[in-house]
Length: 266
Image (cartoon, rainbow, N blue to C red; front, side, top):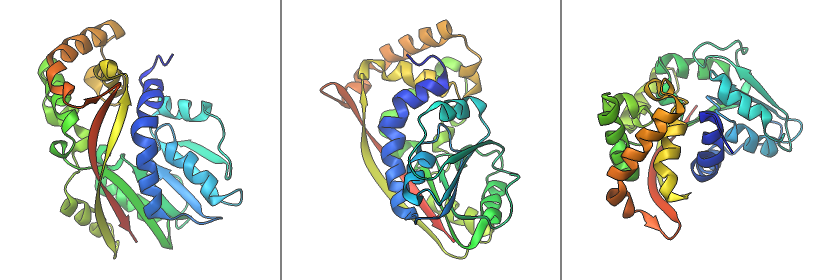
């Protein structure tokens, strides 16, 4: 049974959300055999592990994240086929990686959390080879991810925090803002493509509790609570949202529409 926020994230959210979205990201990336690939803000490493088999044993894959708990989970998972993955605990804003060393730089749902997004994108460009590509995914606005809205607002009320602070994952949902960000870093060609899919969570009755447990990996107000307090909070919010979430339940799953932008820049 997962016990830490990072383990909960890997066990529940990676298979449901981040594995299918990694497929979308890599469709745009089109990695080739032998490519050198950097996965920025890799979390528990689904993108890095997936691309490793695509670039083959002569490729190179680096997974970089500032969160040691996420990297600990990544290191503990079975080694993927293909290229070995090097896990690095470093800030995406100032890595120790050499200039022009990667054919692809990937970032799935991490850019919006950077304390300095502009510095992060500049760093992606610095480590990219002249003919390389950056491919990044960012959730569209909270309103475009409707099953999450009620949860975010309920958490904000209970924690007495602004919704904006808790919904950081959805804070870079404007396509024009993404274009401006990458253009300012010196990219000449930028494409932002909207995508939507329905993700299906098992055990819908546990959706709120698991969401809150996982979010503690990134949200200070939740991380500072002990397990009993988070459990109590989850019970209260689940009761409040019972009718709201019922519209998304299909059989034994909670079917949630989610929308993101995929950025391709070079």
